[in-house]
Amino acid sequence: MSDDNGSGIDVDEYDDVWVFIEEHAGEVMPVSWELLEEGRTLAEKLGDELVALVIGEDVDEIAEEALARGADRVLVADDPVFEPYRADPYGEQFRAMVEAYKPSIALIGGTHTGRDFAGRVAVPAHAGLTADVTEIDVDDDGLLQARRPAFGGDVLATILCEEHRPQMATIRPGVFEAAEPTGEADGEIVAADVVVEEADCISEVLEREVGDTADITEAERIVAVGHGVEGDLEPARELAEALDAELAASRAAVDEGWIDGARQVGQTGKTVRPDLYVAVGISGAIQHLEGMNKSGTVIAINNDPNAPIFEHADYGIVGDLFEVCPDLADRLEGDLQ
Ligand code: FAD
Image 1 (cartoon, rainbow, N blue to C red):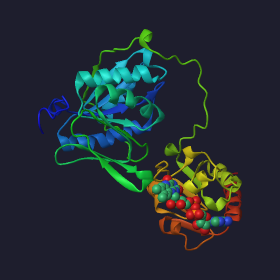
Image 2 (cartoon, rainbow, N blue to C red; image 1 turned 135 degrees about the vertical axis):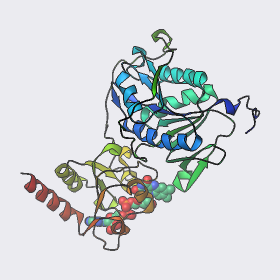
Image 3 (cartoon, rainbow, N blue to C red; image 1 turned 60 degrees about the horizontal axis):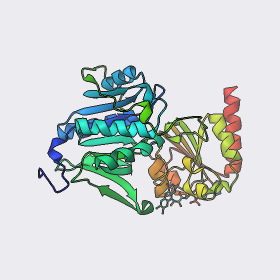
Image 4 (tube, rainbow, N blue to C red; image 1 turned 45 degrees about the vertical axis):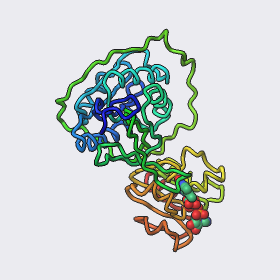
């Protein structure tokens, strides 16, 4: 690759794969460990180091955990200015660290936080940022291949960033397995210079109002409703309660306005991998399957014996969901008493 490609950036000065470890008040977002696992694969292919980036307050334990889960090095910016999260200090700190350490690749979870501040790094750093990525790899030239649905999900686009660094991507939660602690933690923790002061911050958190926070990507059990429920979520809700499951939905149910879009599963929704996925009145369109085909056990309830969802289910119940769901809920509650 040329030293100077006209962008003014010498791409050969940049190496290492960075993974942003997102934490809030000491709690790490699971997507961070998913990216660490996938980042390890990229780093090994490239012969680069895998570096975890931790920004927060009192984050020593999180830095140790990142080492235990496979990072070669952890860069830490630890300061009260980073708690609670605000886009301006995070963006500025991350940008300064990019300038100081020059990573080739930077992976960030596609959470509210990641999407919020990634642009504040990419624009001033003149980096290439691909949002909502669902697959990553590196090509023969060592370039990051960031794949994401495009044109409303009709195609999967592979996006390369040849001339700018770092190659940044925000990546959907739930698409990769999480890195587990290895029992070995022989990497190093490096304290980075904190470049942000409270006086520089243009925002202040006065109050937090929490809305529908259900994160279906983290749910262990899901009951998902489709167009078959005809606007009546009650039978599925009853079943979800009996199973201690989160409610989710197909796009058809979301488009009808029966349920919040944050609960949509599929190509243009979320990717989920619960232990149990119950599809209620969902036909099994390819775009829906794409978001749930990594689930553990799949149960389909549908009154059409030829519905495609049955081909992707471990157990199928052919019947009217308005009868099957309450019946199942009753039996489950009976069992639990
Ligand atoms: P339907 O296909 O209408 O199926 C309803 C099912 O309910 C039927 O199988 C029917 O037999 C059954 N049923 C009806 N009444 C009952 C009853 N009383 N008891 C039991 N069963 C009953 N879809 C997604 O889900 N997620 C996405 O992210 C997504 N992205 C898309 C992106 C693009 C670019 C496109 C083109 C489409 C996308 N879709 C997505 C839409 C997808 O193609 C399907 O249209 C959608 O998944 C269908 O939803 P459904 O299964 O709920 O509805």
